Image 1 (cartoon, helix red, strand yellow):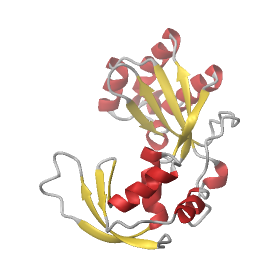
Image 2: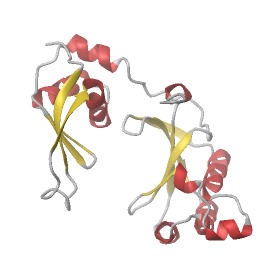
Image 3: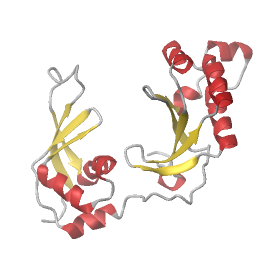
Length: 210
């Protein structure tokens, strides 16, 4: 059976605190969007995507998707997968379209979206200092992050950078630039060893009005 354009999906939360109280939402979803959720798990593996479509259930992040499974034609899946980007190690790191940074260590990761990183905290506004995002991009540009792969979940290329002691100290000292005290505390106390940079491809960014 060829791929459908849209499919009726039952969507519910898998977050532990919401499992028993969150209502199931039924919606018509483009099949391409559903497959995009799968790619974070399967990559562009035709057989695994086909198996998930037939199985009729998928957990992606905190959401569970359920639908009436069907056996899709391999050719249709192959054609659809060809419309998604491939990893491209030849792409150099570019700070301008970076949309998120994740600080990683032996404990929980610390995610910093661009819109939070560029927001000045009280201290930064008082002393008219640069933003925490400026600091992260400066460290990235000096350290030359290495290409790691393409994240379909984030729709971005991922670059990794091992952080030396001096970089970690700069990040901790710069935490006061962040507008949220909880995030400041995390940056100050959680061990950090590396940073991941999520960079959106310019050709895949929506244009004005989208």
